Image (cartoon, rainbow, N blue to C red; front, side):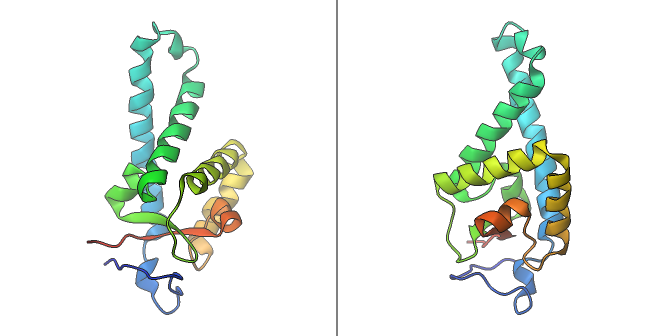
Length: 149
């Protein structure tokens, strides 16, 4: 069940349906996005005379960064997030701008590079009332169930 949210976002205690299943949906969306990112990265191999095979982790990192920034800028959600019905919002209910998306992706990339930060972020998503990760807390954002129009 999804709802359109006026600003500010609803309290989890009063409207649990706004955040119901979001942590699991984020995990599923992440897996979907990783498949998309891997496929796009693999497509670069023949266009670089197969040299990108030697730098494949760096190619994946670059593709991941650009993919997330571009998709989150547009509608507040990556393709994986759209498929599972969630989106990012500011705690005041506002949508992400390009700068917001850039900062969120930077935070995600840093936490991914530093394993303890990523572990803390995942635990926070599972146990905080709004299901916020570390980057979400810093930027005052969260993921919610998308409104269906």
